[in-house]
Image 1 (cartoon, rainbow over the protein chains, first blue to last red):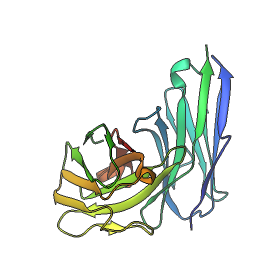
Image 2: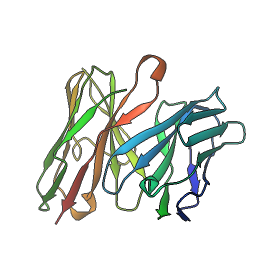
Image 3: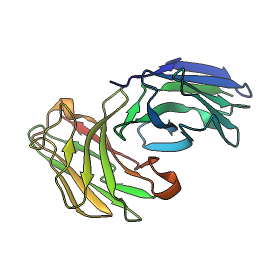
Amino acid sequence: KQEVTQIPAALSVPEGENLVLNCSFTDSAIYNLQWFRQDPGKGLTSLLLIQSSQREQTSGRLNASLDKSSGRSTLYIAASQPGDSATYLCAVTGSNYKLTFGKGTLLTVNP
Amino acid sequence: SAVISQKPSRDICQRGTSLTIQCQVDSQVTMMFWYRQQPGQSLTLIATANQGSEATYESGFVIDKFPISRPNLTFSTLTVSNMSPEDSSIYLCSVEGTGTEAYEQYFGPGTRLTVT
């Protein structure tokens, strides 16, 4: 059974700092990995999708990497802003085509 | 990508009653999914809804408690039946992208349900 772990569970940083969120998964037989953002009480916004054959994806200040063989992914956020404050969720699509989510990292960026 | 809307956005219901949540997509999609997010927890898949067939439920979820309809390729409903406070959650529908975005999922804004 696929398990997804996100570290840290919570992170508080001052504005402008670069930061890294970590995600690990137990079964490397995945189709892709997605990073989502969730604001309090809201739905999910897809940030980045990395296919299993890819090593990284970039969108603006966000960069996500994938090391499928070791079961790890990182989300790098450059020059963080207070508007980046949210919960960041990592999810993998397994061989059964279903998404398995981690519990998320609650990010707070302080002005 | 796909634009997904859900109704209602939130509701407060009494125990023992039922609530039907609607999910509308702006394009035709084959697979739609319903998730539950309990307070402080991550998302758990309830079922997969395919048009023209019965929904496929995950372990721990049953049709009598969470009946699902999928009348066409752009719409689905999830009913939470005989509610108890433990059903208080955010319920989200999602769809799978097509073409080059295959296996990428897009989520609706969610329905925040509180059962008293």
